[in-house]
Image (cartoon, rainbow, N blue to C red; front, side, top):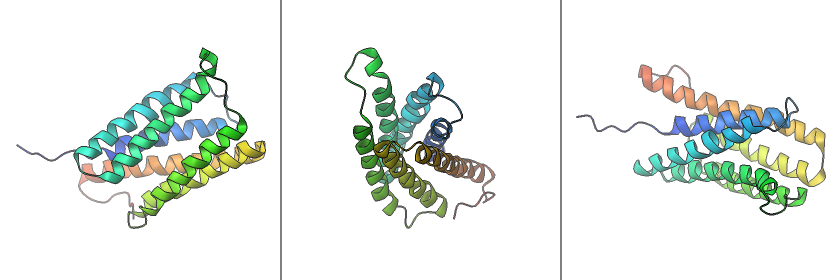
Length: 184
């Protein structure tokens, strides 16, 4: 019996990547924030990443646990921040409080980026671009700059697609047992 465990990273990366692309298509001005984005945030961005993080735990990958569980909880907390006021739970976050929230996620991501310096280049791109995204969004919320929010949206689309690329490269390379899509 083969006891080899599957790599959970592509699941987490796809959950992160697809949800990030969709939210940032909104940020770039393509369509309004609607239930499609919120549902992706809860289920694929949130729950799928948490599941991937728990699977990384079983493999002994501390980085994977912290990254996937944290970003899965980011998505769940973001959706809650957006919908809770409409359900009568607390006040809507101010632009300043959202700026601080996004800044802190950017700081966390920057520190996680340090851990990718010895990882494949594709993973470094995902984390570096996510750091930039969080901080651009934080400044956009703090200043109220719509052009900066649109620029952040475009940067977030790049970030999300970089995660999708890495996820599918891992799946395809593993499936064919050779490097078809480079990650380093």
